Image (cartoon, rainbow, N blue to C red; front, side, top):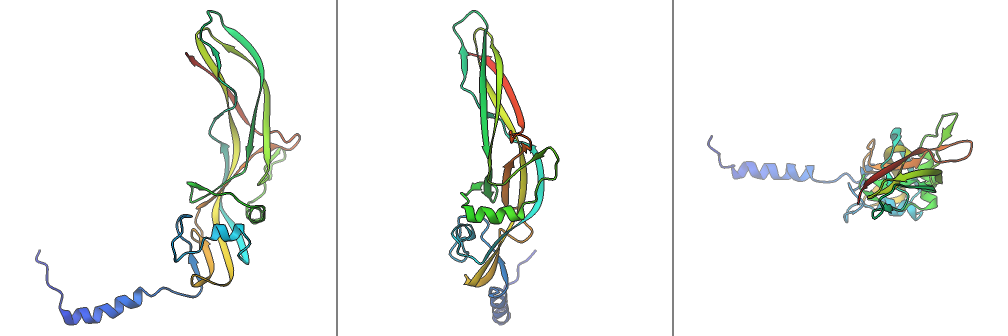
Length: 219
């Protein structure tokens, strides 16, 4: 296929049209930068919400579910490498889990108390009769275990907590224009770039829900 050279007279007409398309809308709403790195033309809505620089920071939940989170080692490694006999130990293992926040999935940001309250307002409450979760709270799981470490092996305990996952977006209002806009949606209206992961616990005693796991391996 042969490429034709663009006529200069046509180019003169085309250029102003392109220029019109590139003019940003200065009123109404906008989507904030796609990560908390922030460019010069986007406000750092996370920092502004944390430091009371906005009129409104409202979290809108889009998706929510509960699942077992990743296992974490909760005991020291118990070694029985040089012995020719199995060893039996009884010990108490503990794991504490607290709410974690992330923005754009991969970047964790510390959330201040004031901003945390705004996130709480947008996260739906648990409706279970036997369990619940509270954004911002820490809960502990404690169990006493009798462990057998075979001769020539090591062992340790892991714990996987049940976590309530919430995904959504932030609606941020400024009293005056911020980088050309009064309202900003981070990372976009209806998106799921903000994550709130909250430990699930039993209502009766506040004990963290989850599973302990024992594992042994050769020295």
